Length: 545
Image (cartoon, rainbow, N blue to C red; front, side):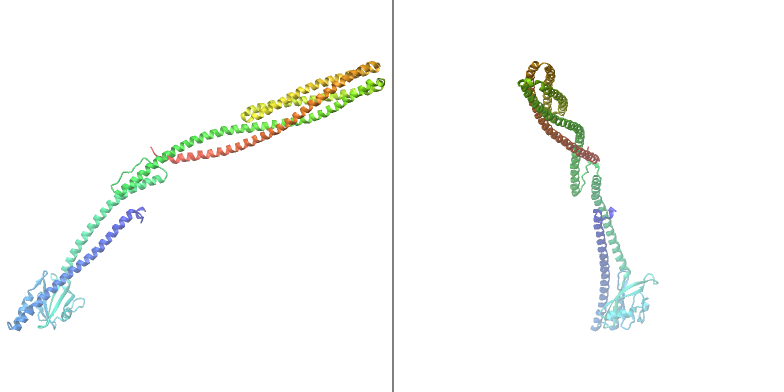
């Protein structure tokens, strides 16, 4: 189908050849026509010239007759004789008719002389003599008719006769043209012209074939090479040989230059694709490591959140317990002051000792109960302090695992552990004091019981009890001070833990964002890997080395 593409070079070249051939044949036709007309014209001019020459003969002898040199009959006879001997073009002759249609001279058929030929007509119904006479008497002209061939009377040929009128003697002088000879000459010229034209056309076609091959050969190679490149493959090391035509040399040179640049470009793309593949692989490995680290960080942050919540709960419990202890200590302080007042009144009113012994005994029993309650509270505080110390230790371990990100948390954990340790120490000291208080209460009870038997002993014991109550008051005041410090430390610990919890939540949120970004980066890395693989597949279709 490409051969019949009107936009192809071959079609346009062959179109030029076709136009050349059409022009050549048109020129040939006009040339043959012109030659035929020229030959026919030359034959007609020859016939006219012969007739005019023959026409001059009777004119000459008529002048001789007029001058008296010869008679009319002699002049006519001499003129007839000369005209009857005239020949031209291989047998053509001159004939003479009279105006009444009688034959005077017809050289091929002398037997017709003197006969009336007015009714002579050809197979087409043309009255030959009448038409010749008409043309001659109108100033001279040609008449076409059918006439027997000289070599074969049974065959007819087209004959054209020219005739002129010689008025003095009433002669119609004419001569015929052998159209077969004329046609033969025209056919010979036509044959030569056609032969030359065919040779010229064959030579032109051969030249065009060579030209088309010389043009289309390199063009086809270029098109095939470009088609191979356009299909996504090809040998980029291939270079076309330079053709002979300057224009095609330029085309091939530019094509080779294009392939060279394309070879370099594909090589660079291949190297870039390989580097991209290696980079995407490294990126994927780094993303896997980062993803594992982020997952571990998320797990750690969750554990840390849980631990912080437990520490916060413990801090809240410590604060609540400290508030309760503070209230109990205040109550104990009031009771101690009341005991001091009672002891003072006992010293001042020893006489009322008996009545007050039971009251004092009850107060001392109540004091023992309070001391027991304080001991229980101290056990709770001791347990909370131990739990806080353990949580702080775990938090410090987790902070150490977190590295740089957990440094601040490690400081807070150390501070909490220090506060817990101080709480334990204070609790131990309070326990010692309470134990002393319990022992004093027991001794007071024994003394009061003994005082029932011995008032003096009661007085002495009352003094001792006053001293003991004074010491207990001091101890209670110290307990109150320590408990206030514990409450303040618990409040501070609670605030620190809340801030730490906020930081842990922020860390967990950041780790989730990092995990999400890591997944997105992983997807991008997979896309890059896919693109690099596709790029390498495309580049591998080209042969560049």
